[in-house]
Amino acid sequence: MSGSKCTRLSGALVKQLLDSVDSVLFDCDGVIWRGDQVVPGAPEVINLLKENGKKVFFVTNNSSKTRKMYAEKMSAMGFAVTEDEVFGTAYCCAMYLRTVCKLQGKVYLVGSAAMEQELEAVGIQQTGVGPDHVSGRPADWANVPLDPEVKAVVVGFDEHFSYMKLNRALQYLTQQGCLFVGTNRDTRLPLEGGKAVPGTGCLLQAVETAAQCQAQTVGKPNHFMFDCVASQFGVDRDRCLMVGDRLDTDIMLGSNCGLKTLLTLTGVSTVAEAEAHQKSGCAERQGMVPDYYVESIADLLPALQG
Ligand SMILES: [Mg+2]
Image (cartoon, rainbow, N blue to C red; front, side):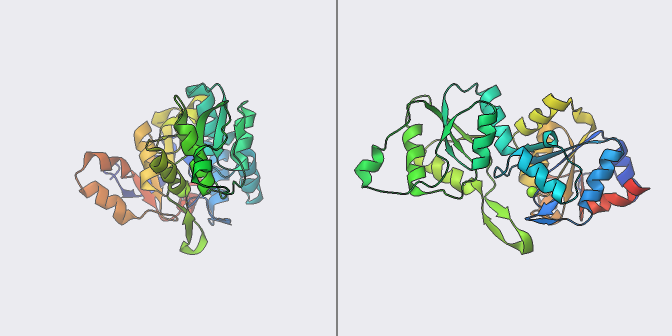
């Protein structure tokens, strides 16, 4: 049944698929871990893929960590990973501003210290990280002092998001030629036990609503994340597999880039949702139908151990 989409991956089909690829891109949240809990069997799968000569990369929309922080978290969980195999949106956003936007100037950053570090690593200065409490009255807020060197507003995950940050972003975006970039549009960050907290998409939408304009987003499903990996490691898209738990970001990225796609059911999306997209007859929704699905990436283990 390898011709039809949304096929359960099991038996001989697993080895067949793995033999057909040289590179595997993994999403992180909901795929290899949930919050701080590793998905059972995930480290063995990743490490065996690498032992079998596959190139393995991690592409995550989560902007709260630097590549180094991710590599440290993964190593502690038993994954054999190096920093350069990790592509988070904090890093990719900095690369986007440097290589695509060719930004000359500073960033007003609604984001984390991790984003600040990745920006600094590519030579971009920022202002805005940390709490920004409200003071004064509306007339003062509209005339809040602005840094004349700021040429872009960047929105990522920011636990200190506030009214003053929203206001400051609006005042910068009102200026002629100010770029507007977001890391991703995920509205929720899934945690252990089916819990979730508001994601970056909520913050980005608030800024877009205030500024009455749309940001360019860097994260999945935008092909830029794949371009980043491909340009640094020479990945052949015909022999590349994207593994993720979300249809609208991970699977869509794979479809957008012409990769093979595998949905894992340890995170957000379900097979029923994938089948609904498939049966909808809507062309735009077909990009959210994976080629294959598994209960967990641990289902790849027998083929790798054999
Ligand atoms: Mg995920």
